Each structure stands twice: as structure tokens, then as C-alpha cells.
Length: 532
Image (cartoon, rainbow, N blue to C red):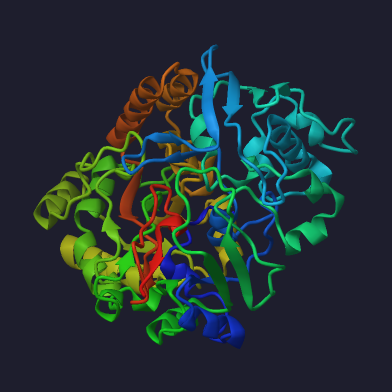
């Protein structure tokens, strides 16, 4: 269940020991060559899109999705020419552009997608991203509750022409085009050669993106790539070679960029307060779709009193915590949906500001608070200072007894949530939208079944109906209006407290320029140039 958590830089900094495992050859090459830049990466579990759980940096270079997002959060067709529905979002017709090829020269066709989606969804293959395809008709047949599937193909997929295929969904989903974006790897295509030997394919994956593999990747060392000369995408690579240098620690990678040996790396949690000084003018944020909350055990008193929940929110100075602990890298949440989400409404949360006077007034109107309030949070996740600070602010600004209590382990934390053991105070939670949609974040954290997983056990039937109406909407604008109305109903109940929109800042060396991220938080490798 902890996979729902947003992997903020603070969390990533906990991964592994600070041991550099990059090859000397790759390091020297990235320093000396004017046509190569390097990006620090942790070791991916796989470079097969359907099997990967943490290969987003490399996969963003190797593959191009059907659709992307522009700077304003609008859909931008990439490999797809169109993704349309004529029956209120239950049946979709996808037309892909002609002229695209995989890195081995094989044409990318409708069959390429249908075969890959079927292979991914087939239960016995146990692909990590299989669930992304679960709304396609026939998915259940490939994933029976017991026994072996009687078929290998989903009945909801049909090739209509060389470059056209149809997708029938089990339930209407107006957000389906958004689910085809870059971070949904289960929807990527595969070339025919991949199925002959997946183990070999993983060592030298063949994609359809702007960069192709330069030989096999060197585990624990590097993943070398070169610009694909036949790339049919709108943005051609400006630099010929790209090397992903593999580190076992985000801290070590950061230090290597400081030393000038690597060109780009994520910011560790303990550097959030100083990375702007370490890299003046040489950083960018990959954040936007991750949000951190405080939930409440709404099944128990006194947390059913909305004024008490509102008082707690107003007593938290998010900006002060951000400045003191994260150096301004975090964004205090002022709504339940970030502005980068289509339909996100900045400043819509009435109680997300800091107002200790109003907080004390609401606490009095709630009847005060007796005993000790316990702020429950996930131990071993690098957030101790933050939650101690929250407890201190609540103690000072509300004049009550407050303590912050970490869990012993991750599993113990979610076991306690499932057992409804947290009854004495707010409960930490965070959610990361798997695709850029208001529906994604609302259903990831605020409504059942995810609200059970976050410990609030909150439900709102009217909001759920509005989400379903948005799913059935005939246009993106109509869907957004429905999701915004659902968010407004949830905000009126105020079951959780939005705390921060979590970024994933990256820093880069003085060797490169034109460094930025797209609307889906992926670095735009094709734009990077190396200074002469």
C-alpha cells in the first residue's frame, strides 16, 4: 500500500548507501565530449515498460507516448493523430501517425499497440503496470481469480486498419486520453522482436523515442543512448549522446554534479534548503501532481467536528515549514488539486492559509480539545522534522497538548490504519496522480476505496456521482466541470488537510543549457544543449 506514496526528494534520499558505482569510462566521456550529456539515475528494476516500476528517467528518452501535455496542461498529440470517442467515453478509436518506426526500423502500427497491451494485461506475465489496462473489456478474462486464463487477448481491443485500433472500456472514462501520457508505461508499444526473448530485450530495449540504446546497458554502471536519426516526433534531440549514470544514492549523485562529473541529478531531501545556493540558476522542478495530506479518523470523536479540523489546518504555517526545512522547494497547498492538474483551482481551499487567531476561534467553537493530540506519521520515511514542526505549531498556535508519533515500520503504519488504530489525531498521507487529471487525484486519496487506505474512511455519495458523471462526459471541459463540483463538495466537508504539493527538483551542471521539464514532470532531454 505504501506504493501510493509520492516519492518526494526527501524519500528518495533514503534509498541506498552513498556509494558511487559509475564506470570511469562513462564519467570521463560525459566530462570531455561536447556531444554528450549525462543524467544521474538509480538502478531501474527493468527497462521493459510494462515491467518497470522506477525507470521513468530512461523510459522518457527511449519511448514516446501516444499523447503528451503542453505547458498549459492541454493534451498534445504525439504518436497519436487522434483519440476520439463517439459514445460518451466508453469506446475509443485511436489513430496513430504514419512514419513512426521502432529503433530497429520496424514500423509502429496499430498492431504494435494491441499486441503490447494484451501481453501486458495477461495475468501470468505479472507485469507491474498491468492494472493500468484494467478498464478494457476482456481484462478480467486475462486475470481470472483462479486458474490459467482461457485467452491471451482482450476482447475490447480490435485493429481496424494498419494505423487505427478500437478500445472498448468496461465503464465510461472521459479521462482515457490522459491515461495515455508518458508516465503510464503500460500503454507503450513493443516491437515484434521483444516477445522472442524478453530477457534479452530488457538488456537492449528497442523503443520509439528520440534516443536509442547504444549497446546493452551496464547494470550498476550506466545506460548509454544516442539520438535516433529516424525519430518522427516533433522535437528532435539537440545533443547526440545521452548517458544515464547509475548511482546507489541520490546524495552521491548530487555531489557528483557539484564536482562536474555528471550533468543532471535529483535533489536529496537534506539538500532542499541549499540546492538553490549550490546551483544558482541551474535547477528546475519536476513536481506538480504529488500532494501531501493530513487525514482524520472520521469514524471517531472528536474528529467528526469539522470546525476542529478547520482549526488545525489554520494553525499550520506551511510556508514557515517549507522555508525552514525545504528551502522554499515545497509548495504550500492551497487547494485539493494543484494548478498543474487540468481543472485545478489555485487558492480554492478556504482553510489552507495560516491564521492562528481564526484557528483559536474555531477551536473554541468546536468545544476545545481535551487530552493529547497525536499526529501520526510514517516512520523511516525522512519526514520526522516536518511532523515534529507541525506538532510544535499546533501546540503553540492552539494552546493544547500535541505530540508527533512515527510508526515503527511502513507495514505497521498501514496495518494500524486498516485496524482503525489511529484515533487520537491526524494521520499522514500523500498521493501521486498516475496521470494528469483531477479525477486521478480525487480517486487516489479522497473517496472510497482510497479513503479507507488513507485512514479517513470518508465517503461522499454526491461527490462520487459527480466523478462518475465526469467519467461519462462527452467533452474534456464537461468532465472537468463535474470533477470540480466533486472537489467543491469534498472541500465543504474538509475531511483532510492539504499540506504541500511535492516537487522533485533537479539540478544541472554549467556544461548544459536549455534544461527544463514538461507538464508531466519529465526532463525534456531533446532540448538540452552542451556548451562548447
